Structure formats: structure tokens, C-alpha cells
Length: 251
Image (cartoon, rainbow, N blue to C red; front, side, top):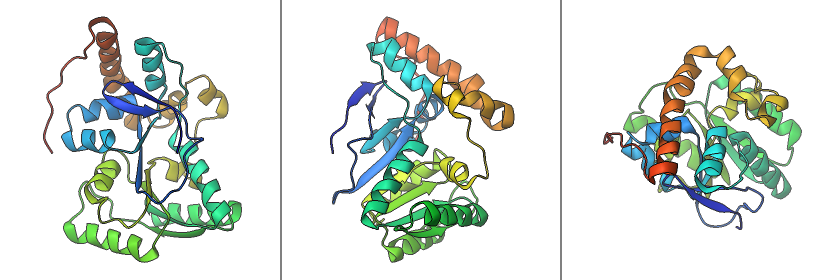
């Protein structure tokens, strides 16, 4: 497994997915953007989940710009959709087993149909967990049991951040899967239940703008609260060599 890496704002960021392969060792994949960075500063478990991930991808134009401002490094944004496609191609080549955990039953059905059409050699299974902030021990055990019974080679988790990353972090030792990727909104994008911004917006680093117009309530906090805080931290790191401190809440 060979790919580039940069240390940025306390995290080891991987800058390429081309060398990522499916090996025997357990590999946890997560993504980082300005909003998740800000959440992690006050959520100890989420911070641990991100920092201990084997592969942490720069899924946000803010992370790309921070690398340029702080280190003068030019890196590319790698979205959850990118790692999703990369892994599906690898799985199809080897006829592997893939499990989708998260989203609604309808979304999962659409995902399954699309995977079977585009990647016919992949064996797919899905499960829609309860829509709640925190799972009970019984619910978590049920989810783990269903996943382990299928014995997937790849597990995609789509329960939104930070819940999905924290769930994987807390249960990774009992999840019998070698490759686990938390990819959130990719479930809806791939199913077609939510439209992803066009390639033009993505190319110019403005993927967030159409989403803000479509989902103003969901995106407001990200763009008008987390984004300014992130910018302040980037500037502080550039000028003073350290970011502004935000009290960490133990969870």
C-alpha cells in the first residue's frame, strides 16, 4: 500500500488513493473536512476515530487550501465518492463481498441494484439501522452480527459524521471485516436519492455551493459556523504555529 501523506493540523492526511489495495490487515478509512475538523476539536471520541484511521482522506476544498497555505503543498480533494468507486472496481475484479450499513431501506435497494448492474461480480448485502443519535447495545450487537454473518471483504458505513466514524472506532475490534470505509452522503449520491454537484462545481472547488442552495438548513452550520472557525485556525497555524484552543468535551 503506497501513497502520499501530509501532516496537517494534527492529522495525517493521505493524498492519493491509487496505491490503496485490499490486503489482509484491517484498514479503517475516514474523511476529513473543515466541519469534521471543528467537531473533532470538541469531541474526544471523534477526534480519536479520525486520528487513528489508517487512511484519512482530504474530502473538502478547505483541507486542500489549508495544505497550500500552511505548507505550500498542492494536494487534491479526495471525496468519499472517489474511494467508494476505487474500492468497488477492486472488488469487482476479484469477485468480492461488499456490505452497505446505513441509510434507508429504499436507498439501500437502489444501491444494490446499481452495484449489481455496474459491478456484476460483486456480492452485495445491506442493512438499514434505526435512525437515532445513539444505538443501544442490543442494536449495535444486531448490526455487528448481521455484518459478520455475511463475511464481507469491504464494509461501507453511511450514517453521517460523526456518528459513523465513532461507531466504527468503538466496534472495529469485533467487526470481522478487513476494510471499513465511512462515506456518509455517498450512499444517497450513489443511489440517486440526493443529487451530487456537477463536475464543473467540483472542478472549481465549489461543490458545497449547490448543496447549500438545495439543503440550506443542513449546510448552514458547516458553511457559516465551522468554516470561519476553520479559517481562523489555518491562519493561526500559519502565523503563530498553533491554532486557537477550543475546549474538548469528553464523550
